[in-house]
Length: 427
Image 1 (cartoon, helix red, strand yellow):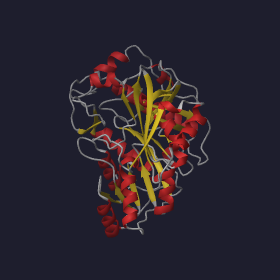
Image 2 (cartoon, rainbow, N blue to C red):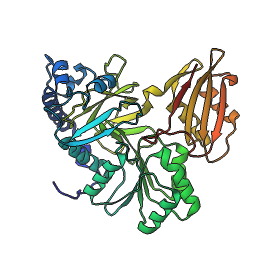
Image 3 (cartoon, rainbow, N blue to C red):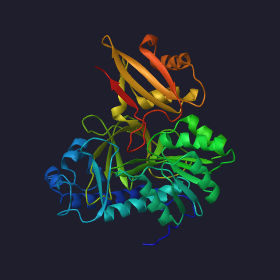
Image 4 (cartoon, helix red, strand yellow):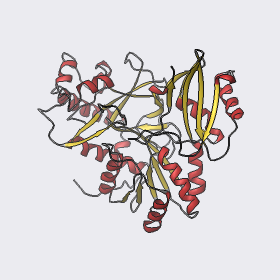
């Protein structure tokens, strides 16, 4: 393969711009090859026995691979998901969990190379271009490999990449002065406090492009990047550690809106029974990585929720539109209202909140909701309560407390660096 990526002259990579008939043919081809290989794994040999598969249209008839199914059958504790007699080279990483038995993501050599190849047009769409110098602030170590993936991809694109990971504001400013990087790849929950402090230390600190993933970014943080650092393009990529990237933002998208990476990791939205939800309906996200052959993932439940939005994006890309709504496990009952951390965060974002954590406690058998948040300015509790009442109806203020903390002070997962969004302290 070529060592340097060829950027698309029309700015829309071909893989994102197929006609419907051509796209269906390509999806059928990829899916049938995946199923053929998957039948060699003991787990899928049992699950797919007797099922007639003729193309991508048959995907809804296949069983769902739950997170528990994956964990029980994953390598190295079992070979049930391997399509060969043992693992013969590739990469191994882990999810952000900190339990005694971690959940591993296993990628064969072909699988990882396919992921890198799929990520090159993705990164171009997110704004990277020839000559960019990229500050890579994703996490690495403890079998967490977000930073390494970007390093592989930047190398193949012929870009200059600076493997910073988690650094002090002083180091970030020094590296910027030395290399004048113009683009960054970040995890917002860990990087934004560093960027704000770096700007205080060096008011001339500027970058043009910010790509983020791992967690959402608030409207306040996006606005600050544009106003304080002069960022012209802010774009999100969504990915699963087990299944790879599956969503990206074109130049017309912001917030929760993304394109699905149809020809790499095929997205389905399903109900609690694994049945497809009509476009526009909210449901659980299932991923089928069409290029992961050593340890296949077919209809894999990643623990996120979303909806497929009907119609084509104004950018002209043929990849479907996906509204990503966050973690399903972050759902809870807010004094009689079913909601989730992402929804509460989006409700309070207009006031300038950049980080949020919800703690559910009990007092005399009644739930008490403590909302901990960070913001660059002081925010009054009454203002936040008014917004919650407007969104959810009249709530009893006595059930809520609000705690503003310093920027970057909310507890993070020690492996992934992500903020722990929901905590239950019920006795």
